[in-house]
Length: 331
Image (cartoon, rainbow, N blue to C red; front, side, top):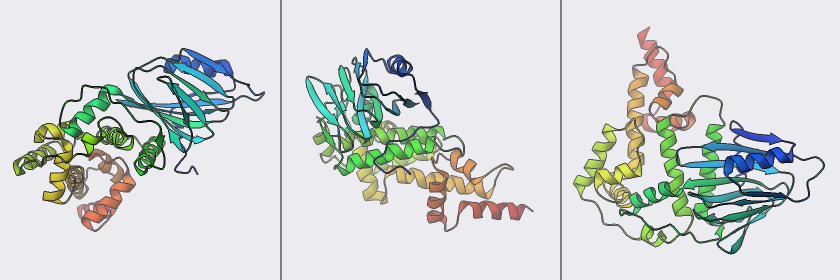
């Protein structure tokens, strides 16, 4: 079983698994746009793999290679960070070199040329986010347009609890993709992708971190009601921080604070409560083919097990019990 420091396997998203060094090189060049690729000492028994998952605004690549190699990339619109599980490497950009390994990493800005050097058998995942998507989330969080580039402090150390949390969240997301019990609801995936992006902004210090840390003006009670009305009207759609900020006319940080003060919960916890209530209605009056998993997914829950846990906390019984009682009453 992988530890918390191990990258996700992504075994359901294979890209290449080969014993041919040339095939591995060609995959990295064609898929990720590398401009150069040099192997070190290639062992007699060569093996390399990459698995790749692409979402709307981010992607994750996982893999390892039995030979050391160096790869060169041009600048792109993606902001990148390594999550290394085993062995070490180095990355160079902006005229500086940074170590990458299980204990530290570096955030590589968009539009920056870079060189990565990996030791043999380095095992890692590479997490990439589109710069415009990152700026959009940051604008919603701080309540003002962000037009300047986000400049990150490097290196990033995994002694930072927020960075450890980001690594766990990344692992959880990909573990869900690796499950074989059905597809993931689109609303849940959009929201979890959003959570990863916001967590990335809080886990890595940057030139807007002080603005994110600053106390925000509290929205008026009517603004909280506007957010509640928006959530009630859109409970079965993805709820984004941009939409919440627009509904309140305030930053999402101030909206979250106002919700905690007025409702003793966050807006997303309020969303969960609304969705659980709708799920209970569906379970009490089920369609012929309804299952706990289908109802959980229909109501935007990413993980059926977590749905069952939250449902029991809210209503004092498992969703399977509600469904079974409803079917018993029919007969």
